[in-house]
Length: 284
Image (cartoon, rainbow, N blue to C red; front, top):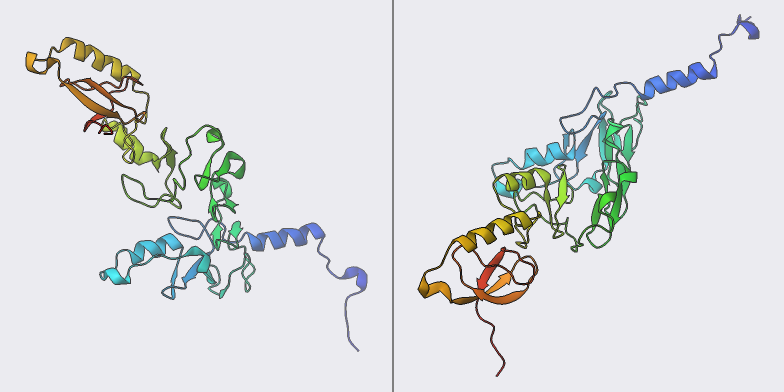
C-alpha cells in the first residue's frame, strides 16, 4: 500500500511565488559578469579564430596586438553562432536564455547583432537601416537615409547631408566612425568626427574641417578682428596694388582681391578662410 498526502495537504506554490522563483532564476548574476565594455552573462566564440572572448571588442583588442600583422583581424558580429554561459559554462547556440541553467544571458538581446547587455540604462535599440544596435533610446534618434546613419532628432532637417558621412574614419584619430563606441558630432559642413577629437581640435585653435576646410564654428567675430588688422597694416608701395585670385573655402566662390600679408577676404561671404589660386584661364 502506497502512502501519500491527502490532496488538501500537498504543498502548493502560488502563481506569484512561482513567477518570483522564475524571475529569480532569470536575473541570477545580473550585472555581475562581463568585461570593461559590457555587463553580460555570456561569452562569445569567435568564428574567425575559434577562440572565446567576453565580447567582440575584447577580441579585436587582443587580435590587434598580435606580433604578425597578417594574423590581425576583426570579428564580424553577425557571424557569431556560439556563446558560452558565464554562469554555468555551457556552450550553446545563440539565444537569450541559457539552455542549461535558464539564466537570462543579457537583459537586452539582439538576435541580429548577436548582442547581449545587462545594462539597459544605455537605451539600446536595433536600427534596421544601420544594420547594428545603437544606444541612447530609439525615440531620441532618426535614421538619415543619405548620410547612412542614425542622428539625434535635433538634427532632423537641421544638418547638411553628406552621402555615407559616417561610413569613414575619423579624420583626427582615424578610427572607423560607423560603429565606434565614442560619441560623434556632425559639423556645419556635414562631415563627422569624434566629439573628443573635435574638442581637441578647437582647443588647438583649428577651426576648419580637416576634410573640406570649411569653417566649423561661427567665425564672424574673428573676421572683424582681421578687418581691423588689415586696416592697421599698410602694405609697402610695391605690394599695395598687387592683386591675387582666391578661392573661398566657406562658400567656394572665386574672386580677385588686393594682396595683403594678413589675409585675403572673400567678397561674397566676408570670410578670411581663403587660399590663393592660379588666375582662371579665359576661353580663346
